[in-house]
Length: 511
Ligand code: XUL
Image: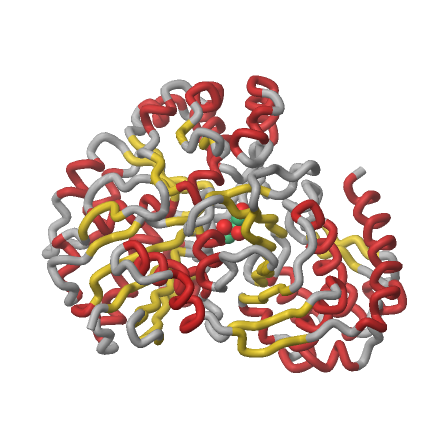
């Protein structure tokens, strides 16, 4: 038996899934929840005086790795049968390592604590993560230096959370620590570095989220790197296709019961991994992932960029490209409104939709409690076209959900139409949300069994890259549709009208 392990180092947790590709089955799953299991690291991110700044402690992700493997071993997970490991990381977040890192990684001692060995290798104590939108000045500077080519070559215009702008800010604010930085990793390549005990490369999937990778040449763009921060090119690990074995599992990890010969596939971003884990690597199928942030993604063929600048292009782990649009106020906004309206999950997911008509009588509420990424709105706040504070809970809930879904529809139009939308993430348990998605898009909506599609995708990547299993049989076995929601044609005109209302509200918020 040859198993493959997929890991997903995301904003709120580290998840692991072991698959048996020959049997087409999931063998076991485990997770470490940062807030619950490792509260000493300030959970997802540390508070900052600047509300737009969001950093996390990179040692949190290392501690989580240790804890996850400890738990898997204690729970009897067959780690000794794992021959390949793949991984996914929250995108854009960066980890800064000094010149001691190479030796520290290469000599990890199983008798010592992983954290104590890696802490001295950090040249920056914290990692800016994807929720950070504090780099508008740096984005403007790089845009002015490079011009429109920044978007056509890197797949995105200058974006606040993208790594390039974050690196520039670090160089400007702390030039000495920047000079002391020997390597800059993404969360994905950092985790892969810990596993392999070497500086791991960055794959095209996650590398494209940096505003530094030229997607026409598939190499770091020297001029863009230099316009971002001096000497940056020398601090970046090589860029490689996701389809790469990047090394062997370091001997340190045999203490958890792994064999001495486990191959590590290049890690990628959580969204590229989810493209694989949701079985959406063929055209005509799009995915809406309802997680901390909501994302919309699909295969993109041929390569092109979003005229509006909100959508991004990343490498597709199976080859070619994918597009992605990220909506920051996803489940955090849903959870906030659920708690505020004192609704339980059944009310939030089902009852609220039964008690209100499709279109909510034209009442919408844009839930941008945090500065929003798509559309770019830096001033947080809820924008409603009715007396939100005094409305019934069911009206508030539908107003928020319909606004979220209309925003996804508006900002995915540049990619084209889709016959089928697959939904994943925590909120995909809500039949109210799923039916509303089908109606707003007038497309078939499908759910899949596995919620942790990034971890599953990472395991499938390992099975393909290390075990040479084909993606089609892996998808059929591991990511079949479990339920289907057909669009209700009678709601089409209602949602066309509501779309116009949404566009007016959005335009007012962007002014
Ligand atoms: C994508 C993005 C988020 C993170 C979440 O551009 O910023 O989806 O990847 O982990």
